[in-house]
Image 1 (tube, protein in one colour):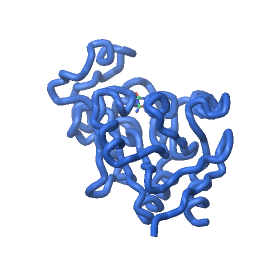
Image 2 (cartoon, protein in one colour; image 1 turned 180 degrees about the vertical axis):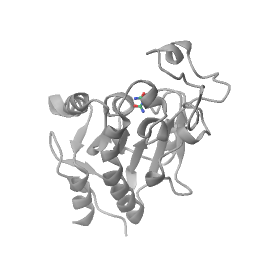
Image 3 (tube, rainbow, N blue to C red; image 1 turned 45 degrees about the vertical axis):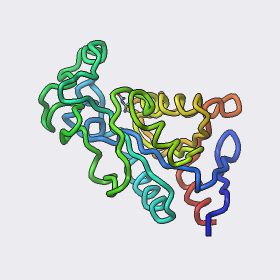
Image 4 (cartoon, rainbow, N blue to C red; image 1 turned 135 degrees about the vertical axis):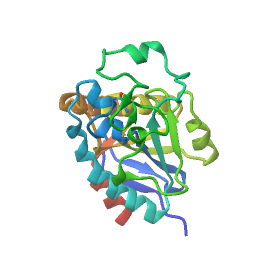
Length: 225
Ligand code: C5J
């Protein structure tokens, strides 16, 4: 029997979703952002700040797999020949290692390298799509939009890193395309706690200008009710 429409305690007001037309999107939970020696660290960030997202996201993955709600993972990354890497992105921030350079976990942010892959704790299961994206948003230059359209998805529940960069960009892109987005506040993380807080406030402000925000416990509650 199909699951009924569910309501999640969220801000700015409850988020309702039909599990049959909803997907969980897990954005860029990659070693390159979350472990030492990767892209995040080359830009001068303390990557340990993102690790609090792992446990709640693992719990949400388990719950969504149990009820059969589709899960899509994304990974930021570039083709080995760097043909999809603009010079502006390669040179920005004067990092210690540039995208494409050899690092401790393979070439920085290059598709197929150890560092560009998803952390062990949140590994996709066989059959769960993994979308490699050259930009910050999941829709830009990828098959993500087609995947959602083919599956009849209307609502996105969002986890991932970083809150104000790839999560925000993807939610803004999705919002403009008519998707309802709920961002799980403990399943998204930033190197900058203040940016994290304000980025979430920006999503829910003005009556949910970009979407909704809730702790993952509220979604787990809704699934169990
Ligand atoms: C960044 C991302 N922060 N996944 N990428 O460069 O948010």
